[in-house]
Image (tube, rainbow, N blue to C red):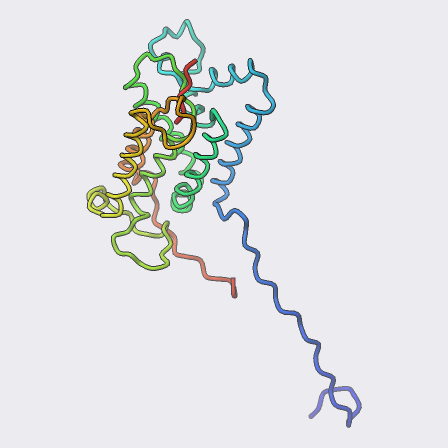
Length: 262
């Protein structure tokens, strides 16, 4: 039985051709929101520091939020309360465009897999504690020093250490998603050839910095290599405290003073 309402001997009109579906848009920055927010915050702070604030205000900003080991030998009655927040806030400041660009590049490279694995809240605590660990080692090795430490390199080194625990699996699976790999134990990570090569290159880079050969930036500006070590050791050995069981991949939708830089 024909349910069409047209004339009996008239051929049915062909249905309208639908335009092909548009492919899903690929975001310009395929970064976790927490990491993208962190990058924007660092860039915003530096932009205000470099383009808006006068020199006196920049000096106040660095002194108030930069980290100095001298605060832990000076009597509390002779200083403010900066010693309580500067072990973290120094990681939000940068000293030059090269400094922040270099740190932003490495933060995207190693922060993305760590954030995807541990989530934004754990990432926040990881940032705070890795910054504090970097500042702590810097303080131990530079007790009473009046120089100021700024930069996110200690946190980035912590992310590098954390990535060594899962981003370089022993079994080389093609097209594997890094943040879904099983976590390596400390012993297994130290037996992993890729991890060993990465750590050796990282150590060589910091050794060059320690003897005054920077990898990037102004060669006249001293770099706090010891803060890098503090962050890396924290991330490598304590990553399991922040780790969570990796989530299975989602089903696809259809076709879809002296200033030290760290």
